[in-house]
Length: 161
Image 1 (tube, one colour):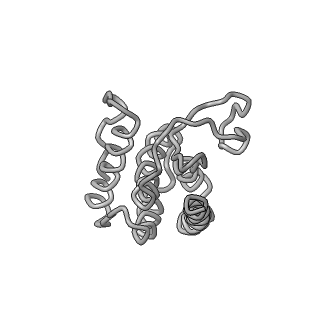
Image 2 (spheres, one colour):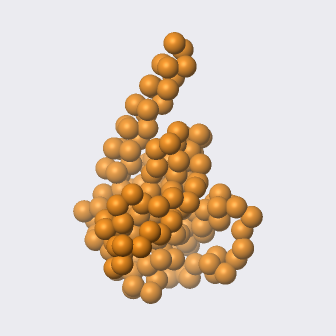
Image 3 (cartoon, rainbow, N blue to C red):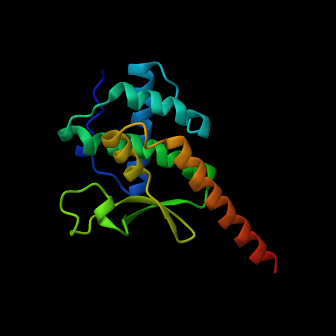
């Protein structure tokens, strides 16, 4: 398997630029190593699942980089569907579910903000990498998209009143 470009050593002008670079590297690796075309569409989530299954298990020392890489791609699927989404650094509201040993320490991670609602694609990818296929990315995407669609419809309705 190809190694990811050493993005962890690069400096980026913004969180958005960093996440775009990681997502682009995920696209490159999926094609180079697995012949899978990731095109940022919801339909590509099943191909992403195939890539993650082929790369599992991810050794613990590589989990952070893998989470950032594949989580950036997964997040970009949301961001491209919902242009008002923006990458932010956010603290997950309940650290004990973030999969960390030291659940008492708040740690900020890249997340997507959509009108005050936060989506944590990296956390979902971490769970997929460490727990396995029961952490279904397509089901997560469908559930979150339905909630964001409802929120967008409410905001649109309020804007017309």
